[in-house]
Length: 150
Image 1 (cartoon, rainbow, N blue to C red):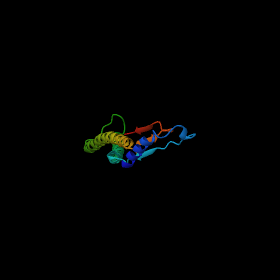
Image 2 (image 1 turned 90 degrees about the vertical axis):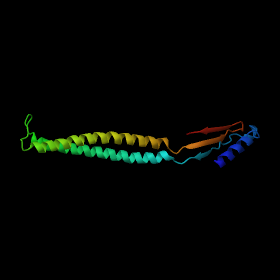
Image 3 (image 1 turned 135 degrees about the horizontal axis):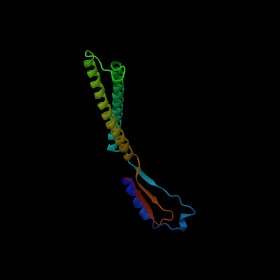
Image 4 (image 1 turned 30 degrees about the vertical axis):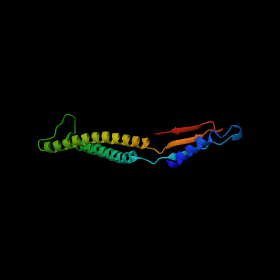
């Protein structure tokens, strides 16, 4: 921050001394920028991206498990309206419970994974590398432009 303050002080002191005739045909505009590094949002963003990807993968696993359970259940219901025998009923109940659990887990994992991915991308976009302050003396020495970005 000290070099930026020194540059600003020199530019402000030199501005009244310069005249438009001394500037020549086209005086180059110089810009001094101080770039800030990434902050704490980047770490959280990367962490949320990882958690989001894990959630989406868990959701895909739930969908695959649900599909396999549906395939197994199709063997117990060969025609519409048919029912499994009394001996097959416990196995069917177990497969249906597995399918229902996988379905609920898959939906919850997809939703939380998607939210975590979107939040991670947002955090990374908000914490991008950007010039914090730019100082540019205007040709002719009439003024100094100062711009900032958060």
